[in-house]
Length: 389
View 1 (cartoon, rainbow, N blue to C red):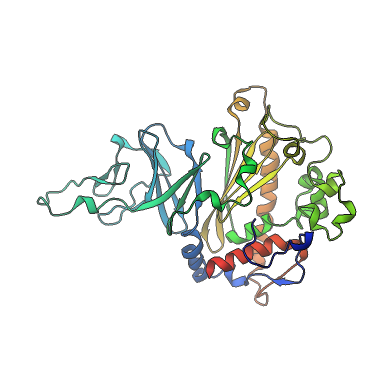
View 2: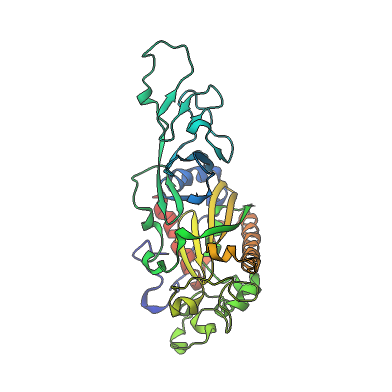
């Protein structure tokens, strides 16, 4: 995650906070009024990931979502063009598509209340009324548009603000991940969970590994550096002592003999042939797009995780496992070895996030304090502060 202030906790080679930093206020994870403020300033003004482009039914079709308290409709026309609108009829505000997904009969979006009909481009097609000619100007009654951007097979929307490039919302250099054919991958499994925690609690857990030795024993066995409660070699103040070491306990990467995140560390299928030796050695690479999405890229599959806020103390987590079509076409391949492993890791994360949410209700606990290893938690919290102005 890129730093968002001039104060860089990874300066001078050591990835750690140089002095104690206070956390966000506990009320920011609980208070309904503050939650509404975050919906307005964070979730409506940033690119938010919704779905894969290939998840729509054949032909003219739709998918509907709730982005916080805002109803969103994504439509695909006969030419596979995707467009997004607020899921609201221009007549009296009815929801247009109540189902989560489906086909568009006749290729039009038709309101179930009074049958106003819209073309896939959002323009008004028909009003079934006895109104006199010229009573309403149809050209001014198109659906409310939402900016949409397709990034390598992933569909992002932005409800408000200038439609800046969604690619810029990813951390790091996106060209570094060009060896993964993301747009060609196929979703093989989807797991959707409701978590009883604020969305920020989940991101904070994602941004540190202090919890890994106690919460993720299997993952810490697969990734030895996680057993030390750190994510990167330079998270250790004494990192120079082991500089140049190939031991994954100090250099990162997977344990000896392991190649991917799976129950036995063995890859599922043939994997991605264009990966470099270093990409294979590390075995896991993260791409983060705040506030809604991150990817974990392995040598044989990619895991996509999407967050959507459901309230000040609830969120939806959607996890999808993507594989090359050749892997899924091979009847001898067992994708469960990879999916089951990370599903267990995510279940462990969800449990401690819910523990944190309950603890934040403690009356005397107004704020916490960050340790040096929490440097990425601090950067995330600084990002939140900056977004709120």
